[in-house]
Image (cartoon, rainbow, N blue to C red; front, top):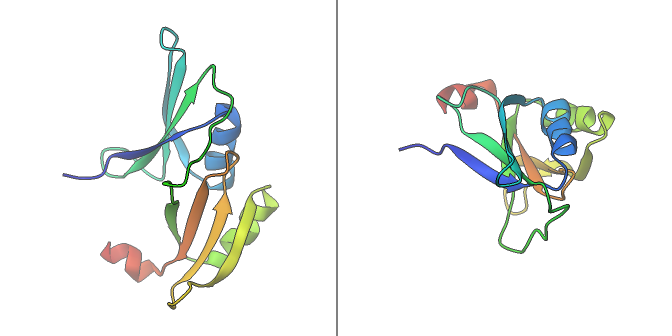
Length: 134
């Protein structure tokens, strides 16, 4: 077994695709409209779905926004240079809501950003060695 994808409901698909591809550097892997159901699914990620977990963005045509709820936490992305990554995200219009620094009660360096719908994305400082071992 392996994790295939995580799904987020988004209020504006083009805005969300712009964020995940333009700001976070993911690739649009596939997109399909379902006119009879009045929704669109778009899958984005950092590699082919056959070997990587991806993010499914679900756009229900008649729903402009969602309440995030208190059960959702965040998506996590490993990065090699968290300070440079946060600076690049801010330059592209992304919202850094917690600047890089050690996590509370630990030493791992993290930061948080927010997508256009308010979903939190955690950035975690990783080394090339950590990613090779994963």
